[in-house]
Amino acid sequence: MFHDRRHAGELLAGLLADYRSQAQTVVLALPRGGVPVARAVADALALPLDLLLVHKIGALTEPELAIGAVAADGTIVLDERAIAAMRIPEGLLKATIDREQTELARRSHLYRGDQPALTLEGQTAILIDDGLATGYTMLAAVGAAHRLGASRIVVAIPVALQSTIDRLRREADAVVCVDVPRRLNAVGQFYEDFRQVNDQAVCAALTRQTN
Image 1 (spheres, helix red, strand yellow):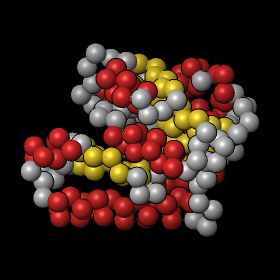
Image 2 (image 1 turned 135 degrees about the horizontal axis):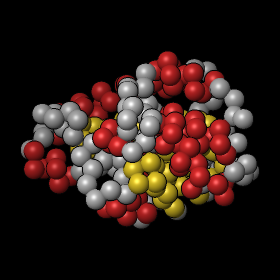
Image 3 (image 1 turned 90 degrees about the vertical axis):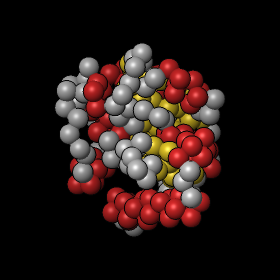
């Protein structure tokens, strides 16, 4: 059990000690929940922090159930089997994806402002979220990091199922995880404090300097 997201990040940083102060290495948070975790990792390892914007695509009847995810660069990962089983019309799915991409554009403008677009050419990218249920958001993030030119991709999360970790290992260069439970119904069950992270908290984390 983690006290909060920062505590999870501090534990995660211990597993990433080999990357401390490593050149051409950046910590990338998946907003919003991954930002406090990634901030703690970046502070502990003296690495720069940036964002990799992704958003889950929720099932129409069960918005909390992910049927895929989309990244700001247009990378899309879908659970085709679930979509077929739910008989989701193609037009409705496209409308849902368009809506999530609009939200990503809003967040990009809010978080990044006039900063140049993210580039990862020749960089080691450490991708961090606060935990993974289905893993679709992280899969989309890994795909985006590949498209952005990352030379090495490391997925780092506080908690995830072994099946999710195995799937990510086929896409990323390495996966680091603090807790691998036998069952995971919701990421929040592994945190004492799992309050929602708002846009203001994301912006504040980005303006802080790494120790």
